[in-house]
Every structure is written in structure tokens, then in C-alpha cells.
Length: 327
Image 1 (cartoon, helix red, strand yellow):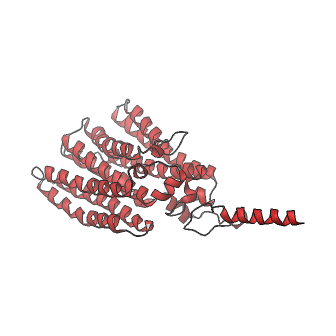
Image 2 (cartoon, rainbow, N blue to C red):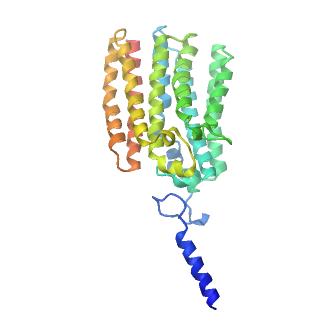
Image 3 (cartoon, one colour):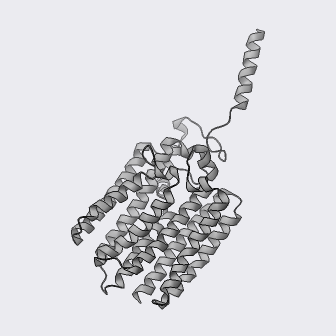
């Protein structure tokens, strides 16, 4: 009897010492699937992360503007297909991240908006299907561009883009977990997207297109930094070694500031040749607000606003530079 009592006390003390799992900032949801609400259309739209879509639109706008410095007529259908490719890949990446992070358990420690897979509002298979459908839409639009332009070698470029989109968080060794996310984002959502848009419309890539691609890529990297800064503690706990986890909070704040401001140096370089480019400095307004939040935030959720403002900065900068290019 005494031994039984001691055993019970030992079990109780062990349970007390056991750390709770999941996101410490959220109340634990019931584990019974019957208590989990099914995803609504609003949930699926939220999982597409619309606040990140300006990062897909901006390089297409910039690439098209750069193309119009070389020719006076707009290839409307090709430009539209480029937009479909960029947006579909961005949505596909967002769903793929939801799926991959969800099945790994990374999102169990998430501070930001709940994901479909981790919240169990949608099955992993359904989320994976959404990602694959998005990638398929991008592939079809990309194929249409290749057929129209005759640049068949660009099928290889498109394939590399889709592979990079999947392995950001997918596969056994995702590069997003190794601190390489910003590098790939800069290359694919900056240089490749902008220069590619210009190339399929003109058959070449101008200096304006490369410079604009650098600007778009830097701002896309800044958005990713803001996202990872928000999740730095949870990513460290989950073993996700993002660049932010590797370099720390203060270095991330400094790097974010540099990435947001550097594109405006490119605006200054372009302004002597395209006077309306000075108007692109208006995008400094949301940029400055984002920087202020990153340096003064108290709660990780505040960085969602910084992320949105940085994304808005990218789109505003792209629209104003497009105007300068076509004037």
C-alpha cells in the first residue's frame, strides 16, 4: 500500500515536470478530431497568404516596365501569363510550406496565423493537393509562354523554379531549414522573375531589368526575414535553422533595415535616366514604418504588420518604377 502511494506520487511529480507541447502562446485545442472545425473558404484563402502576393506581382511589373524601355508595344498576353506563373508559384509555395511544416510538427510552435495542416482543419493530402494544383497552373502558364515565344530551353528554367519552390521546406533536407531561404528568394523572386519577364517579351535582358530584379529580390528577402524574426523562438525550438536563428535577433534587425533601404539606392541610380523614378521614393513611407516596427516590436505578432508593409513597399516601388520606365 505504501509502495503504491509512493509510485503514484512519483508519477504525479513526473507529470508536473513534463513541459507542455505545442504553441505556448495558444490554449491547447482538443485532440479529438471531432472537435476540430473543417476549413472554410476563408481558411483556404488565408492559407494562401495573400499578404505575400505583392512579392510575386512586383517582379512581373518591373520586368514588363523594363521591357517597355526596349519596345513600345506591350505583349499583354505574355505579361499576363508571367503574372499567372509568379502568383501561382507563390501560392503553391505557401501551401507547400503549410503541408511540409505541418507534417514535420514545426507549426506546432507557430506564433503567427494558424496553418491548415497543423490545426488539422484540413488533411495533409488536401493541402498537398492545393500546392500541386497551384504548381500545375504555373506550369501550364509557363508552357504557354514557351510555345508563344519559342524559347524551349526555358522549360528547364521553369522546372528549376518549381523544384526550388518545393524544396524550400519540402523533402528530407529543405534548404529553408538550413538558413538558405533568403538566397533562393533573392535569386528566384528577384532576378529570375524580373529578368525572365523581360526576356520573354524582348528576347533580351536590359540593365534596367537586372537592377529592378535586384530591388525586387532584396525586398522579398526582407519579407522573409520579418517572417522568420517573428518565429525565431519557435523555429529554434523546432530545430528550424533559418538565417534569423543563425545570426540572432539584433543582426536580423540590422540586415532587415539594409535590405529594405538598398532598393532605394537603385532608384537613385535610375533617376537621372528616368526622372519619374524619383517618385518611387514615396515607397519609403511604408518602408520606414516597417523598419520602425522591426526595431521596436514587443510582441512577435506585431511583425505581421511589418511583413505586410514591406510587401506593400515592394509593390509600390514596382508600380512607380514601371511608370518611370514607360513615361
